[in-house]
Amino acid sequence: MTHERLFGAAPEGHWSAPGRVNLIGEHTDYNDGLALPLALPHTTKAAVSRRADRRLRLFSGGFSGDLPGAGPVDLDLDALAPGAVTGWAAYPAGGVWALREAGHELGGLNISYESDVPVGAGLSSSAALEVVTATALNDIFGLDLTPVAVARTAARAENDFTGVPCGILDQMASACCTSGHVMRLDTRDLGRRQIPFAMALEGLRLLVIDTRVRHAHADGAYARRRVECEAGAAAPGAPALRDVAAEDLDDALARLPDDVLRRRVRPVVTENDRVARAVSLLDAGRARDIGPLLSAGHASLRDDFGVSCPELDLAVEVSVGAGALGARMTGGGFGGSALALVDAGAAEFTARAVRAAFDRAGHHPPRIFEAIPSSGAQRVPV
Image (cartoon, rainbow, N blue to C red; front, side, top):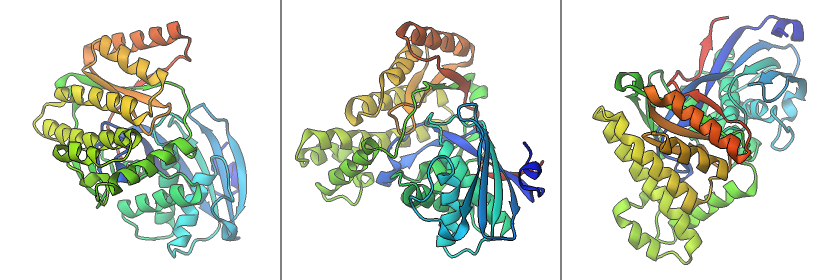
């Protein structure tokens, strides 16, 4: 159903914001650390028109075939408050709320969405909703926000409106990544550098393996990891785990009071080091050599951080066994997706091996596709 048929008014424009995968640097963003995300070609699109009243009406035309169309959801613009909106509409409503909380005057709106970003796959479908909303409103109301300011707005929507205690990686990736590159992101100061990631030139492909195990980061497990990381930094007197150098890790672990905190601190510190090493390899034109770093990161997240699941572990194990240069879970974990870096000629063989292993294990068939580094949020032609 078109925007005009839904709302009786033609849209003033169309915008898109992508999902993302994180090549390496997991659970580092809320620890002031480093990450290396890239935007996916999968996007959430928004069509927007203004209203004469103070209503916010949101319509979903469906999300990647996983969730049916929904709405319109009819909200009072002036009554938006944390906890007042549930379901998918909380994410765009949170973006509107965050802009108003920042002092921007907004009027009533009709917004219709379509998305092919898989929902619950650890590919930032929620961030794409928040970022595309903030990007569209930035243009329509002339707010003059930079992409970083859009990302900050979207992160506030997720943290304060929907109650998910995530870092800012997902929103920065959706707002700021560029086509053909991975983005080296410093989450402490939001400094970023776009690094060419021309996999085809090295005969490589990066596969996304969506396990179809859905995650929910608003639950207690994700929040506990953040609390544990903060406690792990406080014990040795560090402002954040970013400030614990890899060479000082043993000393920092010795100061921790129990094994749980040691198992939470170790992956974050070593992951920051893996990001730095991956950046050095990419700068040297050695993308294929990052494979072992990906696999080491997965082992650390599985064994110490405890955020993997049997389906993710199977995807990683089978991919490497089929010849992948390296593989790891991507995203916050507890389900979602894995990445496999493979030689281009082995991509189909790897995908078949993973599908066959899932079938033998009685798991749902995974969705497997190629991650192609794509552009961040933007206005798009009709």
